Image 1: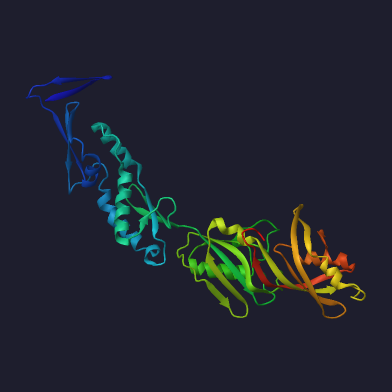
Image 2: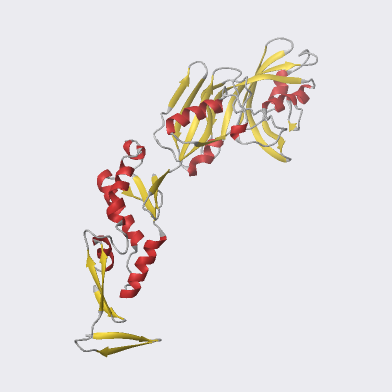
Amino acid sequence: MVLVKNYGKNINLHKIDNDYKLNKYNILICKYCNERNFRFTKKNLIRFKTSVKIIISRKNECHICNNLFQKTINTIQNDIINSHYFIKDNQGKKIDIGTSLPLFLFEKEDNLRSLFKIKGLPNIKNHYNNILRSEIIKVTGYSIDHLNPDIRIQVFIDSQFNYSIKYTTRSLLLLGNYNKYKRGLGQRFSFNNTHNNKKKDHEENQYSHFTIEGIILEYLYVQSGSKNIKIAWSGSEDKNSLVLGNGRPFIVKIDSPHIRNIQQIFEIKGKIRLIFQEVQIEDINKYYQYKIQINTLINIIEDNLDEVDLEKIVSKLIGDIRFQINNKTIKKKIYSTSFKIIDNKNFEMKLLLDNGIPIKQLIGGKEFIEPCLSKLINKKCECLFFDIDEVILNNKNGN
């Protein structure tokens, strides 16, 4: 038998007599910790007059993990599989599972590994994750994807082995199109500041649900189960305008949806129609680049249409349009124009133009825009309302 004595940095081995009595210390560990640490490692040593021996125990508490595996794996696995994220057949099939374990488990394992000089093996967290993932994919048939999972699951276990589970699903990006068949329906929320115009959180403001934005959000909250939905608009129109044809596009980002398969069509008869489809983030920009065909009703505020050559004047709108937003000059284009006289003070004008041109500004010219209809006619005009007859997506070359 050999006794190990430690003299500073020098370790000396001495033979001892058979009658020399050693202190015996048995360390009880579970089958999981044995598999992880001692499958290919010796299970006993003698150090500092103490004989240390590793014993696999089925009944007693594990020295390393306090029976973490036996106490929690099955319960957590069942909770995850029976959650509504997995019950729904329309959920994604790629998942990732991670855990947060109490620090003392790592410390106990590190101390024991230091004693037995165990290096380069997976730690308790790696082992726990692998077993939990394996059990879940065995039951569900899902696959593990660490980079871009449909569902990311994080399990938090405290020192008493109480646990909580956080689910995060991959954001859902939708292209929406809306048709508006009723005048007087605004596009976005209108906020009432009731506290001296100070900035308030969403919940502190009162808004009208009778908006396109309100209808979209209410519908998607129910459809997706998400509490965080953002809309990125690609233009707007007056609340008294209609939106016909294939509808105006917009983008919706739904964070951590419970349900990914959104019903694609929703309609309130005679009021609004919504159509949704899933898109990829790299395709978003092309949905902001489109032309609109509009029909606008124009009134001559002062004077009338006598001696006005509308055909010649309206044709001068064709070509490049310049206007300013936040002191930045924007350049867009009008492609075609036509008109129809209603009476001596009113006429309709149809335009095919790039999305984003301010129509009322184009007609009235209260702010800088060139050309401007009021200036071309040399009479003060106003746009009573305009309807969007059609939305035409540009091709990839922007033509």
